[in-house]
Image (cartoon, rainbow, N blue to C red; front, side, top):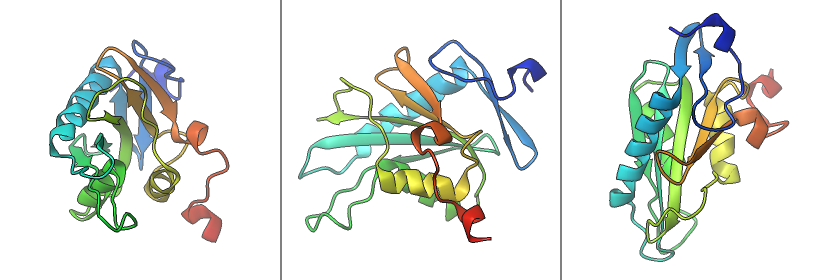
Length: 167
């Protein structure tokens, strides 16, 4: 799918290409992929339920099967039961049997205004560690389809705890 020279290249911002290999499946992550995921994540802001913080978050998760699984944050008056957009996307995918992922785009802001990058919380990063290879899973933080940064999971979760640590 991608050129061999692009394998494991860093994707610091738009315009670069990388390849994520998930259980032998190769998924190309390029500018078009990033923009499509960001577009889907932005759309999810419309479904965000945030009557307490008004901080809306949308996520679009790319499976190794090249399908996109979306999520939004859902708040709760008791706060603890609140679910983040990233985990909503992961849990939707896992509940259909999908457990291999290549990338996730995340957008968020007060009242849905995308004025800064929205990074995943620690709990969401830990869920990513459960299902993703931290060196080949990409996290796309965006303010728009044209303004985004891409990190590997290992960059945003150094020394993360994963199922490998229990073996």
